[in-house]
Image (tube, rainbow over all chains, first blue to last red; front, side):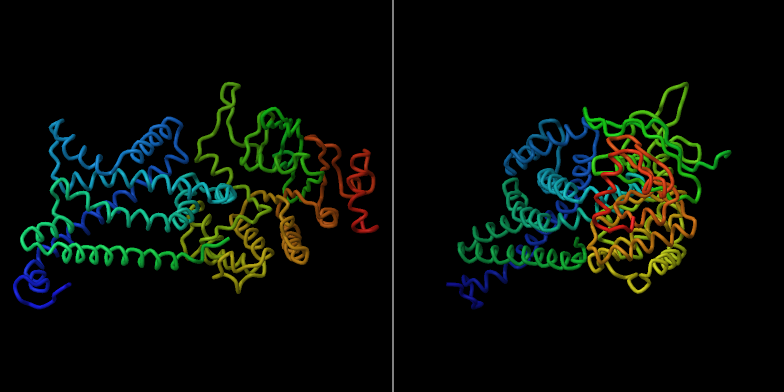
Length: 226
Length: 262
């Protein structure tokens, strides 16, 4: 089926012709995923800590945020961020609207994951930190979070993979990421199966790499046992 | 200080919900003394110890360390809770060793000891490493500095925990049933370290079921029963002249175990 010959109309030729579009699509997919992962991880850890140790009103607000975010389809969230914000006169470029929507969604997931991880650290760890005179912020930073983050690693890798897959939804608001780039190429040469296959392979390569990095991190922290 | 009382508790009460666990505890620990708390489980020993280190907040009465009330200050006749920073500073003057060791599993033995030295006492890493090395050597674990807790036996973990507490140079060291979670053959090594500390003049408040240790090392023994101090005195008074039936029957359980050693 895949014709790798370099004659016009064959997959090999067409792929070579469109190499820059595809690479740019891969670049946009990686950039939007990467930014989302960074934002969602930082915010998710902050929200997760607040969800565990915050004042009651803060916990309430964040609990509400997490439940709302988890209950809304990501696609609706993306469309709302892009078109909805425009209604209020806030015009966000499609790329950033997508990153904001995906970050908002993934933040909720990571916050919830971190809360679970923090609560699974034995109570005695907090007490041992108190006993040597560490203040709350220090106990969090030097005692609780290093252990919680280690426990959070496997579900966090999962969320990262979901984020990469979620960036395909940005095609709906016109962000030319890998999926939309592939579709634009298909519209020219009608090699539909071939280019969907190519996109699939490229997504797999990206996600396989992330999973491998996750595995390396888990081995790096493997000394953390009880 | 006139009477050299390092720790003075008067009328300490503490309830969990509707259950009153401490019903007015009076207790004094003088500088350099080893005071042991004995009694059946549920008698309030551990709760009292946790109140001293502010892991629990007592409801009424007062606990003074070097004359300062623990956990609050009195302002116009009212108790005001201390700020988190002040509470932490008070805790840093009191060391505590736990039944479950509670070593930090993500840090090596040496780093466990160093954490408080660098972050609480503001020592440099080099100084902290020196001090940690000295204390780990004192508890016989010089060769285990780079080991993570999971690579150590229970007895070794507990000795690291003692090094971690004592390296902070606390005014008072609390021991909460520190051998209860250990395999029997590992108990002796931990008690040995505690005995050394006692002989070096460390002020210690010990909750323990190791009656031979309590009898041989303590200056003062306190028998608690139902949230009250039922009898207190020298080891000889408490072990050989029990005043109450409760204390006699409590000690009787251990006589069975140790023959006539008590």
